[in-house]
Image (cartoon, rainbow, N blue to C red; front, side, top):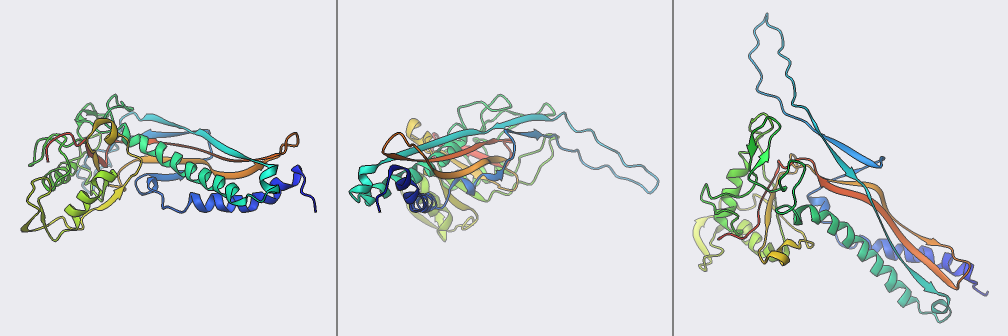
Length: 314
């Protein structure tokens, strides 16, 4: 049977789609370990940043319930962006049975799709120390504005034995754990943050695991290896490595973050999940294959996240 230009694209599509999707999913996603991944049915998702409630007042048997007024909410928008890419297959590649070459193109497109998603999500953290957010300061800052007019910090400071923006080390991590537990809501009430994730770039993967997996206290950064003291934070945090951190490369230091997923509002919205298909082109001897997706990523609150840009001492 002779394969005409209208036919060969349709014959290739099922196999190329499988290769594309298999490649896209061959590595576990990283962004989903730190972002709240949700589906969206709207062009724009609006999230209201609500003020907290104050402490409850004592009520006697005859007293009425005291109803509190929340601070006026702030509307935060997630505008979904479109992403698309594709490749063409010439008729002669099929005629010459160059199927391995065709398959490589589908694999490469699948990897590029995965990298696009991870890169866009990582931008939220790559700009965490440099780009101002909804409250006029970056995601990680010492001067976040609470809705009640107060301020709050979620950046490592020179207290509790830590170093301002200190590099990842045992003492700086412990200081960060202490400081993060002091996070409060918009009424100034402690919200009992429980850090569960230590998020690092590849350059800190082994440092992080040494600190958290060693039975004895780590002396990372001191040149003395391990001590004889018991490591009381062994296994306390899950280490998550994001390959798409770029802040490390531009600054020359390695940032790190603590995250409590139950409090953090790092959000990722899927408006249209990844698709793969063929576009018919009857005017050429080519078949066009393309992928399409639409999503947004950002944050609605700075609480539940704590960080250091790693420029300080260990």
